[in-house]
Length: 89
View 1: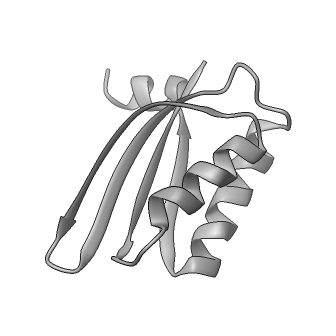
View 2 (view 1 turned 180 degrees about the horizontal axis):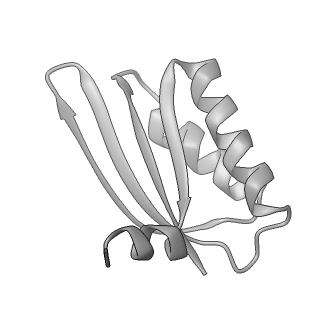
């Protein structure tokens, strides 16, 4: 199973490292990353494998969102089933 994680916020040093470390803490494997900086805004989309997720998916999504708030970022975690359903309509 996979998830899509989006991260948006003011650019600063260590965003990718911090989000990656949080994923590793919960057993989430990062498969692909796309990131860019538009003027001073950091934008990133990650595709991650959650086969080895060591907690409930909803808790992980809440943890990522809370981490984002703590760092001044918007982090949204979406299960691939929801992502795929949204794009089939």
